[in-house]
Amino acid sequence: MRNTRKAIPDGVWPTMITPFQSDGQIDYLSLDQLIEWYIQKGVNGLFAVCQSSEMFFLSLNERVRLAEYIVNRTAGRVPVIASGHIAGGMEEQLEEIGRISAAGPDAFVLVTNRLAGEQESDEVWKSNAERILKAYPEHSFGLYECPYPYKRLLSAELLEWCAASGRFIFLKDTCCDPEMLAQRIRLLQGSPMRLYNANSATLLDSVRLGAAGFSGVMANFHPELYVWLLKHASSHPAQADRLQSFLGMASLVELQLYPVNAKYYLQLEGLPLTTVSRSRGGQALDRHARLLIEQLRDASAWAGQALTR
Image: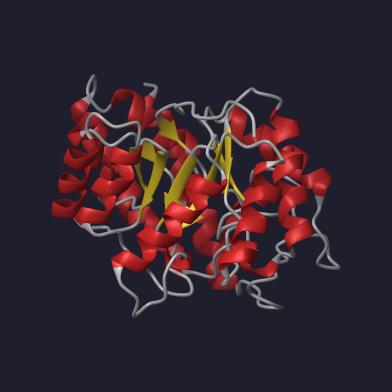
């Protein structure tokens, strides 16, 4: 792992999608162009091999290669963190953590629901986390409250323990609760661990409270608008408020057939992606769904133009 125990920048961290060929194999040529698209949009880092990447439908070898490819392709232009943490047993988890970490990301992101079963206690979670930290003493870690196969939000006590350990630098927060966000941001103050909100509707409020940035699926549609919001939240508050209203409303597209809809949006951006998705099988967008994505892209372009006037 490169740059171990090093902080990562604030800002926009897209949860990367994985392009597939028509036969379902990873399309690395399209991935090249996707990486360039993210960077050209001004993102601050990339979150690779996550749920948006369809990691639960990738073999361990595919997850390792995908992480390594993205790290090598970015070539240090933006930092990369990676997950791929999907195994159930602890021995299997330690193996995937080691192999994916060796691919070179700046941090390995642990999925919170992998460290304890849905009915198991925080003590079980903490014990398993301690085992991982001990196994990889030089590594930096992140945490991701992934909603699949079940969502495990960190308790205040557990979050405080993670922050105090000094080993965690990233939290992809999915609580979507303004009061909890405020509490969590307070708990993390003074630690190397920073909160990156995954929820569009609560983003601006959380940033004004001290959140480090955004790491959500909508950065696969119009990341440049999120980049603008985070850069100008303080200097242009009125415009930021209006943009926040648009981004919150636009994020309802998440309820569509994601990530198929994101791949269609990227096609409209000129990227040579198919809309093939392992997680969605053979499902495709109908004409009405495509129309909504087309209108979203037009509205996003209009919003971007309005911000530069």
